[in-house]
Structures are given as structure tokens and as C-alpha cells.
Length: 86
Image (cartoon, rainbow, N blue to C red):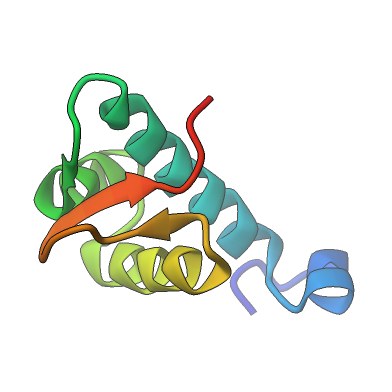
């Protein structure tokens, strides 16, 4: 629906290509910031995501999916950490 074209990713993974790409961007943001600090403030991730063209509400939804998938977790309220470091 976002592009008006057939999205084969949604058939294969249940998620649109745009959604998968944005989730990767957010995960990358968290991992990059986790190299600099122990826990990454949620607001920093939302601001960085917005700079990447992902609005804050969409970013919150994607973060929730990444948490559900086990790629991110919240050690404290409003802080994030990746489950694996690179």
C-alpha cells in the first residue's frame, strides 16, 4: 500500500519491504549508540530515526516489533539495548 507496487517481502515474511528496511535502520541506530554508552535512551533513537525519515510513532511501533522479535530489549524504562553486539 505504501508504494502501490506488489511487495514480495510481505508474501515471504509477512512484513513489507519498507517495514523491514526501517526496522534494520532502527536496529542499526541502537547498535551504533550502544557502542558509545551502556543503555541507549529511547528519545535518542526516536530523534535519530526521525532524521532518517521515520516518524516517531512509526519508530515506536517498529521498536515494539524488534523487542517482540528479541532483537532489542528495555533494561529500564525509556532505554534500549540490542540483544547482540557486533
